[in-house]
Image 1 (cartoon, one colour):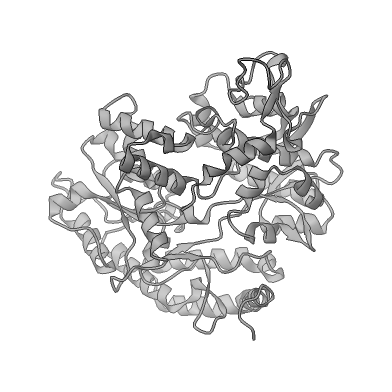
Image 2 (cartoon, rainbow, N blue to C red; image 1 turned 30 degrees about the vertical axis):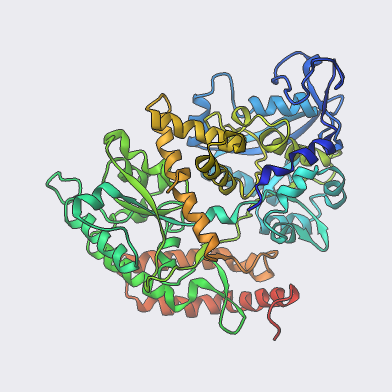
Length: 565
């Protein structure tokens, strides 16, 4: 596989490298690839020759609104002198680009969403607004946001264009309305949605069990973890499988479990006729719900899972009450919380499995859900593109400082108001680490892989980063989650979302109602309602707009070159 970072020489030429205000590139002894840290004197501010990284003089202000959270507060508590409004990223944007980041307001959770809803409804939006696809279409139809077609073409750097194209045309298709680019997609990584089974291997050993090869094995392990006292405390107080009330969470969700039954409730998939159908109403889902209902009835699921979010459900992991969960590659950092209570706790990622034992398809929902639009009338729409450019450059470009601006090892990337990233970055880092382990040549490790290797080495040596290194090793080690992702890819197991277009008219009107109905019915069935309610749900889904949405989705699919009627 071509490693993402191999283009750096070409990019350096495109940037003409960099110059400092007080010096020239040709100054004897100067190293243009070692820029000063932000926060110095004005004479030390780094400037780029690339137009998309040019500096406003005088500076301009760019306003946003921001959602706060417990995780952000925790991050900031570990970063003295930094706040959401004033931190290493806001300082960098002002010093290098002359862009002052301003938050019109900051709020948490439900309060944020209520205020944001009022803001959208009234048309009183900040200079840059982060929206989903439906909200983007509404703002565009109301004439509240600017056409960014020419702005993006003129100001996006080669690195930005490369990174934002890595998910294919889908993100830009969704952001394009009436043939015009109305927002910059903050491209998500579909491949990062790949699911694994995380299992307490010390519990497997304790009970004489083998890793799962089929879904029957998964059910056997779950039952044993519930009934056979794997923690040896003499009590039946453990659960076989972790689950949250949201059902589709990236860790402790059901997507990977359902895939074991060839059920894909979060995807539009192609049927045997070549038509697109909604996975959430297919008969395979009913079989998966029947298995979950039996697990709930026999105590293998926490009886209160339906009222617990990820944080509350995760406490059962930390308290050593659950031995298995489905989740993405970063599930390693959730399961490592059990080691605070028991340093001997052992976990490992395994591939998801199927009923038949054949390699199942691994569902990858369309991952780009956020789009950044610019308020109509704001005089510098290109400022948004410049933020994207600098964020990518300082993390993955020629002048990148990954450990300063992305992972320090704290997740300091979260402080930035924009967060683009190369969608294959984690798999690429693993491939570099794999080559390093094979050859011993450390020069193959680029910034991210180099940082990860330092943490794995610290863990292996029992050093100061031993605790966090354990989780990194579980993801990026020789038999970690990323080695399984490589296997999924090689085996052609990855099942991508088939519909990546702009939300259809009926989706905008009905999708939230249909999603909520689906989740409520699934929760009810898992907790004991008759399985026949799934069939009733399917009929209601079609009647309440699902049938119409299916027609619209297939019309889009034909336009994109899919199956003909």
